[in-house]
Image (cartoon, rainbow, N blue to C red; front, side, top):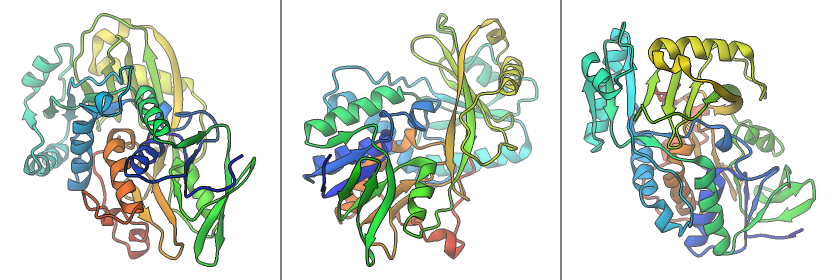
Length: 382
């Protein structure tokens, strides 16, 4: 077991691996990444694999826009021998109420100022994009052809392999159980296999970041929320874009190998650590998706699973350092969109940790915004 490191990263999802790679790329040495199970065993490996720029806040639009541009060349940049299965088939976001129409047009205004090629489409145009879409009750939609899909397992593997080539030590099946401080400084991490001393700890443990922060008296406003997903048998390609409806609380896309992946948000979901699947989800998911996309009624379900969102009060991530605890950094609270902004987040966090000026501002994502009451609400989350 390694006894000391210059940087300890907790969490082996895409965020942790992207930060590890970017730190090492910038010349940082003696970096250790800890994962309590296997890489992608948490939220990354249980996500819906969509990537989109169509958000409602400028910062998330910028994070996503930069990340998608990075996804486009990620295999080459990371010298990955496999494929991350990046497919830009677009996202079609459906509007069913006048309030949604108003919000979508506000979102488009933000997106267009940033050069995002999204556009408003009529129900008839939406049906041209997805011919099997049921347009009953649909008032319109927004569409961005550069949004799409990417494999979270392959993407994380690409970052992990690139980080290891640069000297990062990745230690799996090793759980961080406690943060250690000396005075007002972080001094290490206690694990189930011993202590690693370090002057810098980066916590990327999703909703479990709350428990770790509590070991040094920090109350993180993170709550776990179960989200369930199912996947169907693969069939011939019939749907290019992800179809997303905030009204129905669902998303559905056909991935490159032919299966459909779909998920459903439940506003009544208890805020607890629960990875169990339910027949109620299967029933409701089937009913809603076959109303929107009727031909999917003929598909067989292969399996279903559940993962956790790490929700913050404004559904925005916490990025940066924690005041009063020198050397402790956070990248958590992504509220369901961590994978799609991971490439840029990894770069920004590395810049911040090394004391550089960040390529994009991250101050609005600081931990103290909750105490100040300066929430920065993201309206476009399922």
